[in-house]
Image 1 (cartoon, rainbow, N blue to C red):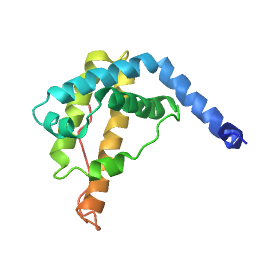
Image 2 (image 1 turned 120 degrees about the horizontal axis):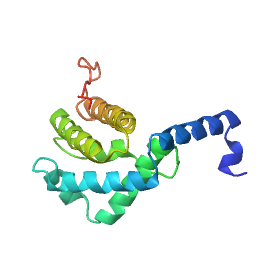
Image 3 (image 1 turned 30 degrees about the vertical axis):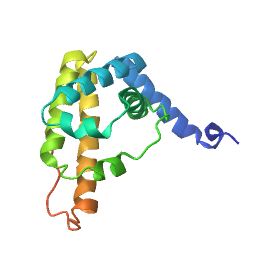
Length: 158
């Protein structure tokens, strides 16, 4: 039995609605590819984040393809991403809130430059913030052992 055959019809309908909503905002595969390329060019040139990424990514075209699939899955419910972002981020020593804040600044700047609509910029920016907050929370819990989570993750929004 194929994966699609095991997915509940309501789930398929919800996925299609999310795709339709995204496309109505101008979010499609071509935009996502441009967003990923533009954003990671900014990351690589950034004095704070560039040195974190550069020694860890030997094959940039492969990484950009993976990030493209990640954002297609997030924004278009494409389901074509496989990977574990949490494990990758946990493996980076010293990664902290200031890095995620800088990542979001660059991400928001990319969106404000190339997003097809203000709604798309808001929608994608909210997703990026949620992802960054989730990764930072995971780092605090798993790497820093902050079991009580005495601090709430609140990163800036676009």
